[in-house]
Length: 270
Ligand SMILES: NC(=O)c1ccc[n+]([C@@H]2O[C@H](COP(=O)([O-])OP(=O)(O)OC[C@H]3O[C@@H](n4cnc5c(N)ncnc54)[C@H](OP(=O)(O)O)[C@@H]3O)[C@@H](O)[C@H]2O)c1
Image 1 (cartoon, rainbow, N blue to C red):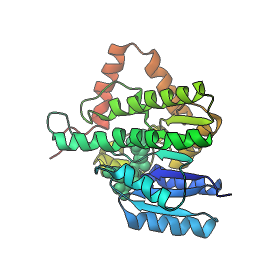
Image 2 (cartoon, protein in one colour):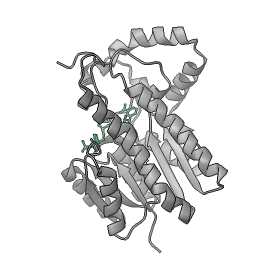
Image 3 (tube, helix red, strand yellow):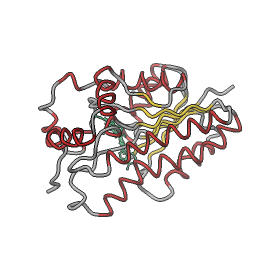
């Protein structure tokens, strides 16, 4: 019998690469996608040296029309089915809503929200027919915090990913299907994320205890989806911040965000 296969988006760096390592170590086959094919090839080579794992490399830009259909077609053309999804690809769009173009905002929504929802929607019928599915949507602690000056749609999209995951999980539960869906909500994590969005220098000011390595973040996510927990906030500091955001009166939360966001939100894109 073929092993389970998990499709991981944004597998060429950071949290996605770590998901690939940990799922391979747990005996899953992988379908890896991102734009940088060379990174995916190198990762596949590394993982195949360590474990007996079948790996499909599917280089794609999730911002392009038809990307999700093309990825799913490559998997089915290879004679495989999607048993797991890690919707992880993402980035932060620096700047304000006032000084960024609609094209950039639309591409952001496509990559971080529309494509992940489309992937889940199109994989669910197969998962339902086989009565098995494990879906991780990489959201963020930002999904709990008030909106900030700059990076305008990031918090709303991550908040939506949390609600989306809870709903898919609840729908599967109501059908009594063995399909789990989990929103993984990391806080600051050491990856390329802050290099890509140009905030590395700013975030260097933040204390080390706010940061986690990708390894425990991903481990928490895989354990949560395995046991069927709809939302997972990894690490005690992030758990504390998420709890605080729920009890803090909204005006105070907004004031804290206003004061602190200058340290990690870039508002000029020049
Ligand atoms: N790092 C943090 O502090 C942090 C905190 C909370 C949540 N997160 C979330 O964690 C997820 C992973 O981020 P990361 O921290 O691992 O960042 P990262 O190291 O920069 O990795 C981002 C991944 O997304 C892929 N990607 C970006 N745009 C893409 C596109 N248009 N099409 C396809 N793939 C694309 C990149 O691959 P290519 O460039 O090769 O396409 C890369 O593999 C994101 O959803 C992010 O919002 C991160």
